Length: 633
Image (cartoon, rainbow, N blue to C red; front, top):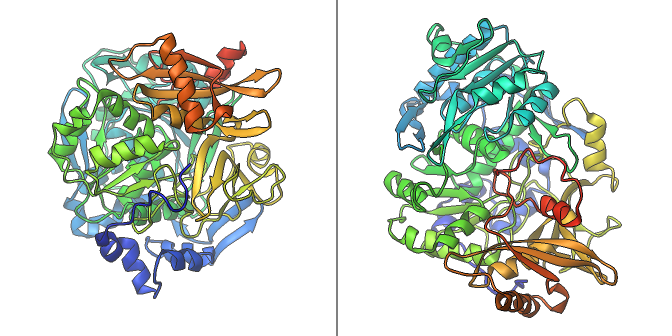
């Protein structure tokens, strides 16, 4: 584990002098990163300052109402996130600016200005109203990465309807469960999408789900391909035909700041996914502030969050925050390595992307292909990099920094969750960096690491990451299940929000996340994070990816079992197994030596790129695998 003194990457001078956060601090007489964190311990003051940067129909009477575990932020305010994301830009030159540069997998490129986005959003909002969708009604959106996806979300929010986006890679069964729980009135889908050169039928999946969804009155279908589909008369209508009948003017509804913006379903360890509830006001404040100050968004930036809008990362940092800030974003439909491993780098070079935000899984995939694919392209437009989705191992961090960032772009390693809505632990561009650490909690956020009794864990020792104060973009509840919300997040220790993640705090106060807390092994009384074992293995020159699980041992309690994919050109062998076991012993210690190593062509992952260790563990122990609706393959 990196210590406080070794391998510290200092922020470039340009960020210390000219970043958005440096300017914000100067205006308030705050000198330096540490003083900023100290001043923001008054978190109500800090978040009220951030909220002033958005447009409110009516200001708030009270910043926070906190009745543990339920929070209300900006109480009494009237607000709509779409007024901030689109309407207010129509009075400025931003209306002519490109909001999205969209590229399809087959290679089509479209540029959508803010005004075009606004007009199409208004048409779809009017179409939804014509179908009887009103404030508070739920709309399920089952679309691929095409411009109609953010437009559908914005159209719902504009009229006060609640959207529930279901990732387009999900099966009809997963879609059905989410529609039933949300009791959606309308479903918006496409006839098909593209994945690795093949058309994937979405309307057929939607029709299969509809057999048990009595709440759905209408299905709106985007014509994505030329493929013919069955349209049910009276229920189904084409997006383009429905939209062209409508006016491109539509008033945005002023809502209570606590009105529900969306539900987003996240898998539990059991079969039933849980609908995370986010609201207009606080969610807008958290996401806009974190994108502006962590990624230092400026007017001329080209920002690429390479996630899918079907996940929280895409909701927050492809749709809502970039649009509120008037930014230009890349939106890409296809696989990152199709038809060649340099697809991303071609787009990045052509569009002169300045900020790239992606997952450690994607970075390790590019590492596996080798640095030559990125080296073929001019990536000098980049000025900042970001990481999201899971802890980034130091080896991948350094590869990303050197081969993509040219040894000059700070990496914003962001820790957050579907539940948190926005980044909570992350560097700012003025933060000294340590490869593998998400550094410190952002201003206005109080994260600690505690032991099994809820007391602060000793420095350098692992424990559970908890939150000690509310924040504006936090989930408000689980949809229709406040008891489950209390039980899941607030029941273990009084007054502490349980994130479910394991972490360690070092002597500088930097936090090192180690993955899910249930992915920490107890080997002969020693706590060992699976992420540490994986990080050590990925540092070996033969290894592309690794997943570690704990399997029961009659003497030691748990022992590590490891699943590995090798880099191209490497072959599995008994000699390599022994070499890798010794490697882990040397890197971490004999306690971490894997009991067994299994080679696989690919590891089971969610579509957002997280390795499903739970599935590997269930397979290893011969147990039921539970909910696998988020599985990629």
